[in-house]
Amino acid sequence: MIEVKNLVRTFKSGDRTITPVNDVSFELEQGTLASIVGKSGSGKSTLLSLLGALDKPTSGDVLVNGVSLAGMPDGQLTEYRRRDIGFVFQQFNLIPNLSALDNVMLPMEFAGIRKAARQERARHLLEQVQLDPDKHVRRINRLSGGEQQRVAIARALANAPKLILADEPTGNLDEQTGEHIIELLSSLSRNHNTTILVVTHDRSLANKTDRRFRLQQGQLTEEAARSRIAAASPA
Image (cartoon, rainbow, N blue to C red):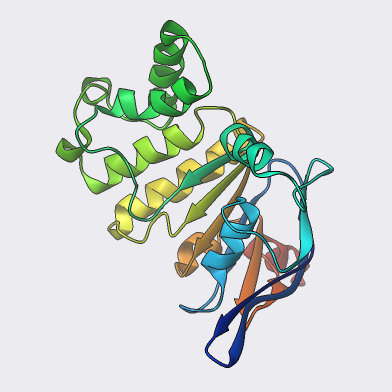
């Protein structure tokens, strides 16, 4: 379970204090696919950075399965990011001169997993994200945008994280490819019991998540998911 408690992040800009995340609290059960929508500059990426321990809050706390990140030493935060978090970025952030297989193996190498086991798991993950087997050994710069995003998702799953944080995962993709990525994320949350939190401006993606939040002027509110709205409607 992910628990966010009264999270605040402020920045100084000259004489002004900017608060992109302002007293945010929510919980996500394991295996939930959730989304956060909001305009550019609303604080979505700041919140994602706090959840992924890429940034530290001004106040408040994030707990993952009861373990608090507040006050955790930098070395332990690094281990938390490596062990418990998978990141998926809009720009993919893959190494272009490495193959798809090598990109997925890389986080496991940092985790000290032996080569044969890394290769076997990387192939299995690439099959799960439905990348054609003949493209496993292709360099990233020879893959399409949709194929690169599939590799990025497989890499995020490499160390079996408890939480995947995805920042605009369909932002650079055409509509059809974006639909495939949405279906893939939904399938992964169910089949791997992985909590996935997606930051997006894509309403079609947000509408297909289990829970949907809106971040506006640093304040987070939950919107009723489409399935809940349908269930609540009179027959």
